[in-house]
Length: 82
Image (cartoon, rainbow, N blue to C red; front, side):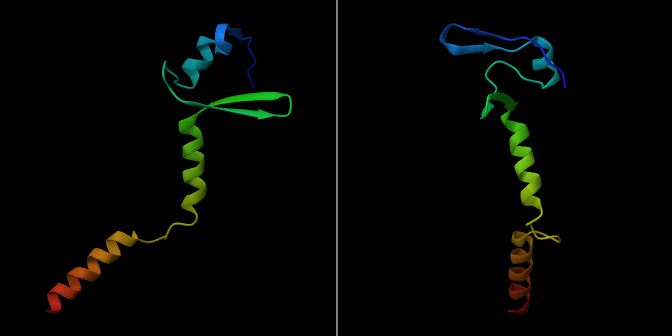
């Protein structure tokens, strides 16, 4: 874990250290998620949270093929039999 000082400026804006922004590939205008956990504040890129959610949901996805691929194949078989 790396710790650095940041600063809260006018309007409640938080200035993140440049090294942290570079490490997380954050640029002006990027969306971040801000989480309050007890007396701690966590800031993370929204894309990392989205990736984490996608990985969790992947466990519920069909293991072989997509439903759309199966539907297309079924429709083609029906068309061939007509």
